[in-house]
Image (cartoon, rainbow, N blue to C red; front, side, top):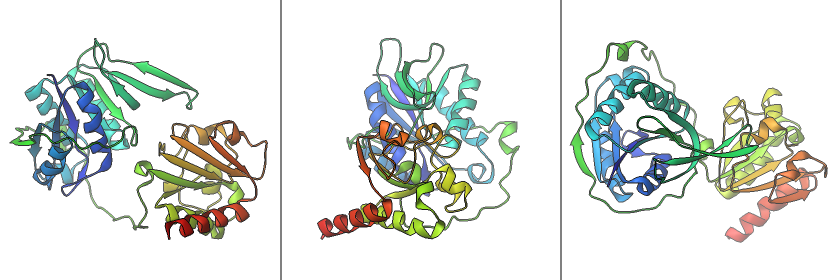
Length: 320
C-alpha cells in the first residue's frame, strides 16, 4: 500500500488535533507516515501511533525554532525523497499553507489548499473544497507530481487506529535559504482557557447586534457553558468590541466546527465565507429578514439579550 506523508503540528511533543484528523484522512489514501520536527518531535510517536501512523520520521535542530518556514520545507522535501509518497498532507494554517506551497514548487507538483474532505481516486486523491465565499463546492485532484494538500481543521473526526509508529531519524540538509528569515522574539499569547478558534468543535460568535464590548460577556458566558471558542464578526471587531484575532470571515479566520452559533450577526457574505462549512449552524437575530437565516439549520427570531442568557442557563441546568 502507498505511503502518505503527514506533517505533524505539535508543541513540545503535544500533537495538535488537526494532525490527528489528517491521520484519519491519510488512512483513506494509504499508510500514514508522520513527519515530526523540532523540540519534542520524538515524544509525538506514541500519540501518532495510536492514530494510525505506521512510521514517524523525526528531526530536531535549532533551525526549526530560530528561523521561519524554510527549514520545515527542507525537512519535508527530504522526507518526500526518502518515502516517495502518494500524497503529502499538511494542516491548513497560515504556516501550513506556506509550507505546502513552497514544497509543491520544489518537487514540481500541484497544491490544493483548504480541503474539507479527501477520498481515494483512481488517478490520485480527490479533494473537496468550499470556494467562492462558500457559494460552491468543488472536487479536484492534482494532475502533476505528488499531490500536496492542506486540510482545514474539523474536516474529519479523529479516529484511533493503532499502528506500529516506528520511529526513524530523518536525514535533513538545510538549504542556504533556511536561515534567511530569523525569529527575533516571541511573546506568549494570553490564554483565555477556551479552545483555539480554528480548531474548536463549537464556536459562539457575536456581531453588531451585541452592541458594545461590555456585552460580549453574554457571548462568552454561552461559549463557556458549551466549552466553546468565541468568535466575532468584522463589524464587532472594527468597532473595537473584540480582538481581531477572533474575527470570523473572509478577512478573518475560517472555521468549520460541528456547531456554530451566530448571535446578532446579519450574515453578510464576508462573514458567511468564514463559517459556511460548519456542520450545524444556529442563528439568533431579532430581524426575521436577516440573510443569516437563509443559511442556518436552526434559527431563533428574538433579542439575543433575552435568548442567549436563557440558553446559557438551560445548558448549565442540563449539565447539572
